[in-house]
Length: 591
Image (cartoon, rainbow, N blue to C red; front, top):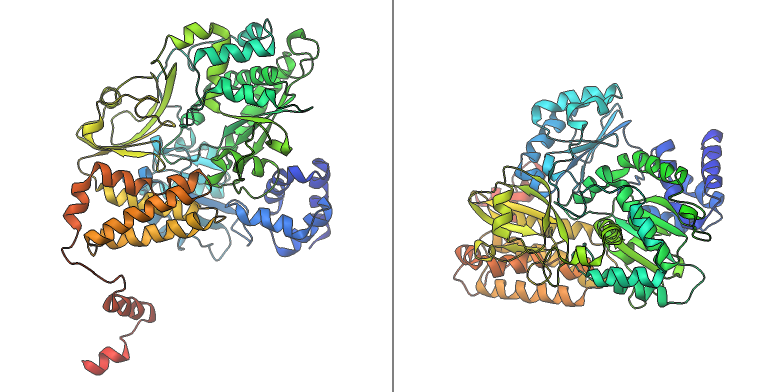
């Protein structure tokens, strides 16, 4: 390794005080400088950070954005989420492959371009989309591909029309997107004791907006009641659920509201440090977010003695992820923020007991923290008057797929699915996937239900399928997603997702029987109950909920036979012949 590269690595390690907990930052900076991680590079990093080489390699191996081989000067990652494919993403991929002369996963011979896939990049409202040299580019067509390549060669991707990411905020509600003066929530907060702040949040009925809906006030109470000299506030901005992009809009349009909510939480919990864990696909937003933080420090809204309150010291740092869906699970996120692979932790203990660096930590969703700030500004009664009895306030919905107006909507909890579909211009709707692949597939018979924790909660993703769509085809794509994103730690998820995919494919191929369907359901329930974390516990949902909502689709493709083997000899021979480029000797002998 060249001496200047070694010097660069050592300098980056020094920048983060050789702190093992900042390994993710160290690796991200080194990737920016060197592009990839050779075995020799890993050795130098380990030496510079005073940590075992195996630990560096372990973290590196977990994340999609840390390549181990030299890639091209320019990187094109085409999003392959369901909505991207619904809008012609496969044709865009073919156009890139033709223009560059390589297949996805390969690098051009002149090492100028690497072409690959990315999972959902939070641009489903502007699909098909891609990340080119770190810049998101949306609304792509095959005709745009040459312009994208030419722009990359000139380092001018940001100048492309598709690189101007639209907010697509279609409906502003009274909570998240209503105007609020910076510091207003803190003014109200600092008039109360920390306990009174938590009681106010609890009284408002605010529940976590990530989908599970745990009461925010109770989470803060549990965190505060754990005696410790240090507590942390962590914001989960790793919205990797395909079809979800509401946090993208908040982070872009309302960063101050989020940071104010985190500061309110810091005061209530007695925390001095907050961490915004930002998904790697949103790295392009980091400079603007850092600027907003700096502005708040200048205005005494962060830092020491905030707003003149002696002893109230709180600041926020941004931790970037590196492309791992499972890091949206709170304990996996904490592992990642500590510089490790993002494997979910055993629970209990919960993060409010032992979270970041084993200290009591409250992990809250972006939307939740924004709502907490508005509760403090306007009062618990104001907030609880919106929505329903057990679902107070508003909910952000990011809608994509077959509707006239994809984008983000802030609606009152209690809005029916039918009314929401009308609002976003969806017609002849066959099905709606709410909450992303880990959520539920709903049929028209469910559209009279309300969006609420009482009936159908959602993290915020709505993917609409109209009558022209083959719904089971997209459920298959969801299952491929889970198989790829399983962290592999526990066998029920690692093996179970692969088995589910194989069994599901047999049925989709028209070779399944009622017994296969029964086995598939049993296997799905097994994976759901035996898996360690939320990924495995929800991975079977595309199959299980589509069975519940659309039994007729399965019935139409089942065979009447009692048993059909999984292995097809003729099909396997044909595949082998295609790979070998010749007919098999066995067939020739019989022909």
